[in-house]
Image 1: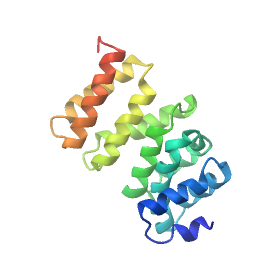
Image 2 (image 1 turned 120 degrees about the vertical axis):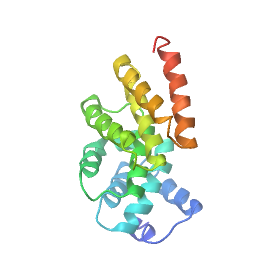
Image 3 (image 1 turned 90 degrees about the horizontal axis):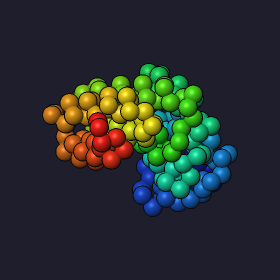
Image 4 (image 1 turned 135 degrees about the vertical axis):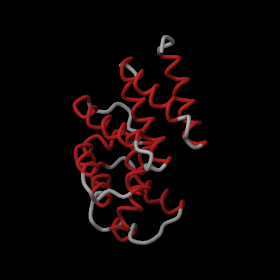
Length: 177
């Protein structure tokens, strides 16, 4: 399958699932997908960012070798909301992230969460990513609690629902927070 060609036009859910199945657990195919998502061609980048989430459902470890490139992309001015949503969702589903990259990921996710211009879909994935990384760190969880409680005052229904769920999980992990 030619991924660039497959992702050059609008795709539907069934096609996205078929492309994700083609990529499967193959690191080389996933690397090609990441290259398209982080590349300059808008259509494959946009549709490819959606495919990442499908692949990550079954093979979250595939993203690990690409995290530095993803962080560099997040630092660039080339980011778009669509691609960023796919990337942050992938980070939320990635499982254990390498410790040496967690600081950069946390910074990006807190920035997204705190920016009122960030679309809610990106914010909810950012808060999940922060929670996943922060589980063993009560100080980070405390900071996340404060941000979520403040955000719930003006956040949308989706923001509030995810924030409540994460606050409940934090309460189970650390009842003193």
